[in-house]
Length: 246
Image 1 (tube, rainbow, N blue to C red):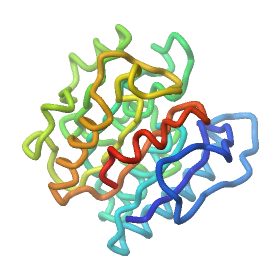
Image 2: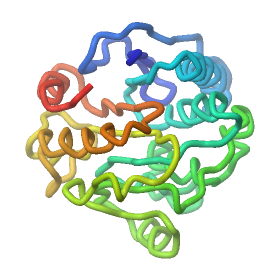
Image 3: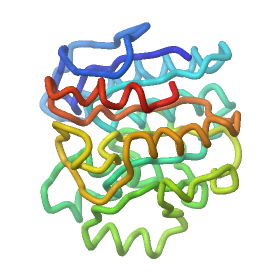
Image 4: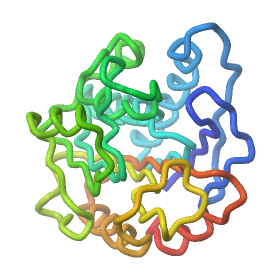
């Protein structure tokens, strides 16, 4: 497994980002321009290139970042390495991440990446990465419990499956190569210090680690994304390191 650090929260460089593992490679670049999507374009192209190279070389890249939006680049890289076919997705997150620019009340772009991977507004990121949408029936959302009404409506009408971490097993994992995404705020907010957006009522870090292991045991995980969505200096990275099977 190759560990790649992308030390950003969206377009904010976070050189001191606490992550659970030492990186084999760190990807940074100057982010310029007035448009946030334009600022991210070059960085995500670099991430997609690195992921594609690792997957073609028989490695499973583990991409650590301060947000979930970098998932666009990771999925694009896996797709390039698999003849243009996007992987299925298992998405651990306390939040749905299926907002849109039209539905978001906060304007927070980090609440949209899963919806974008399913095909929303490809002009924002996907077109530039030549990223095809992932069919909804090949996406599983794990322990998404903090959902705004528009997200609940979308998920209820979509083919995205929702499960709890304890329910996730080999039979729940969608077919084909898998992008395994773990936003670590999926852990109960009372059990993990310093989270940017803590949500109560979730699994423990150990329970998340056990569920992640069941996905890895399918032998079909092509890439992993770790969303280290916390404030630095609270010890969250150390707390999850012992629980995660990477």
